[in-house]
Amino acid sequence: MARSIVVIGAGVAGLAAAWSARRRGAQVTVISAGVGETALAGGAVDDVPWDQLERAARLLGGDLPAGDLAPAARQFAAELGLWDVPQAAAARLATVAGRIRPARARDRALLDLGPLRRTRVLVPRAPRGAWDADALAASLADEPFARARGLRFLPVDAPILRFDDERRIPDGDLAARHDDPARLSWLLERLREALEGAGGAGAILLGPWLGARAPRAEALSARLGVPVGEALVGAGSPAGLRFEAARDALLAAIGATRRHGRVRAVGARRDGPGDRAERVSVHVEGDDAPLEADAVILAIGGLAGGGVAYAPPERGAGHDLAARGAAPFALSIAAPVTLGDARGPLGVVSSMQGPELDVIAWPCGERPGALETVGIRCEGVRAAPGVLAAGSVVAGRARTVLDAVTTGLRAGAEA
Ligand SMILES: Cc1cc2nc3c(=O)[nH]c(=O)nc-3n(C[C@H](O)[C@H](O)[C@H](O)COP(=O)(O)OP(=O)(O)OC[C@H]3O[C@@H](n4cnc5c(N)ncnc54)[C@H](O)[C@@H]3O)c2cc1C
Image (cartoon, rainbow, N blue to C red; front, top):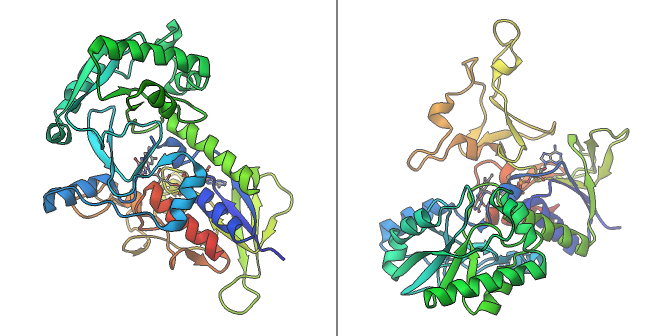
């Protein structure tokens, strides 16, 4: 009989785990409470944090070659159909903050400056609060990558907003309007005029507006004859909506069962030999009886995704002091696992105010920030008999999309 596996969490780690377990013939149920980190991120797909890459490249004096993806990760990315993963070189993305940064892959709506040389990039002006084409063009032109490649950024007047409300509606709503082929064709004509007016260009950089159900940039680029794409937003971009649409399509295609719900607790029972639990139980809020499965994969995200909660002892304090010291972080689900960070299991803090967050929370030099490393301690992806973990909830791993894919694929294979 097929193994039954419950995946908790529908971010990229949960999706990769479900895909990998289904490939091995398991019956898979994915339970998710809603939005997590993947849906908040902007569409840059990194393997290692990009600032580390930049530091290493500066030290070594040149661009670092991008390693190829493992075959399963490449296959997963191909079936998801959302990302462009260049073979050898990293993509180069323009951020709305005016930086140019490397990324191993990108949501297909984002403009890749990597292949461009000695050309100019048009940046159409648009009267929207978070879009200042002139300031953006000036800071991008000043980036070392732009200077080394001879890239110039030219702000241009182009009436790319069609209706008055488009000055104010959220990026996601404007992006959704470009899911309509007629509206996309209208934008195409405005961009064509802008190109002609400027006497040609090597690319066009827009805000995060090119599709909510799917990336629409490639259709525009093909018809216009020059690459068109979005600038990268740090948090809360339509890239999250596009991920959710692609994820839902992939889960439907592989035949995984979907459930919306918040899991409160996971219990594992080791009845058999070895470290495989006989059954795991999953308690969903509002359900009378728990779900039973052969294994569970916790893909519930880290601190930003809601999988881990900051819980200093003072949180449990009465009128004066907390009853006892405690570890300052807790998993948001009751489960038979150990929390820790890159250094080891979490200890009880002696201060009732919790750890010195102002000292340990943020990265400092080579030391990663505690907020990014705290999670479930695992051997590989195994957290306890019958319980595996994947993605940002795993202690001490890089908080990146491709690392979440790697642990997700592995958890799905081993569950
Ligand atoms: C603002 C932001 C920007 C980022 N930028 C980048 C970037 O540029 N490049 C990059 O590579 N990475 C970036 N990251 C990191 C990257 O997005 C994450 O490492 C990755 O998406 C983690 O995926 P995940 O599946 O582990 O977690 P998540 O995507 O957080 O998924 C967790 C899932 O678990 C569900 N869940 C949680 N608790 C429960 C529960 N009790 N019951 C049921 N479901 C539950 C949530 O609803 C969600 O569906 C960024 C992250 C953030 C927050």
